[in-house]
Image 1 (tube, one colour):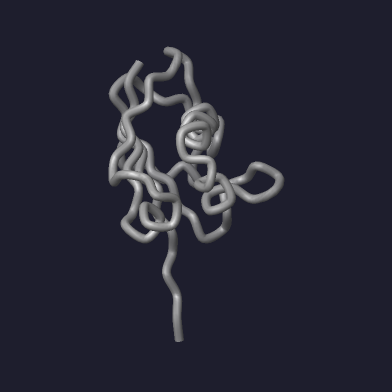
Image 2: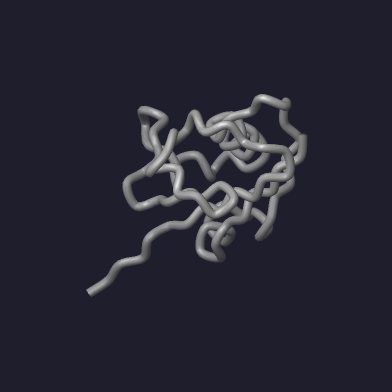
Length: 94
């Protein structure tokens, strides 16, 4: 099945990835599977999105078809065919 990952401009620049990455995944793929495939294509994305335990970083929000995965099943969220996954990093400053 096909899933589109959308990455914000700052993350694109850090990991040298395009704004959208289309992934070909098994029919029962989870968000974790999609992030694993994204890491395979763009290895430097891993430490920007997930921590050393494999959990989503606190400042990273991920939405699957508009739904915040942190308010749902998290990394085990099953992705529907044609899903759009948006990865957002919080920006702070003072």
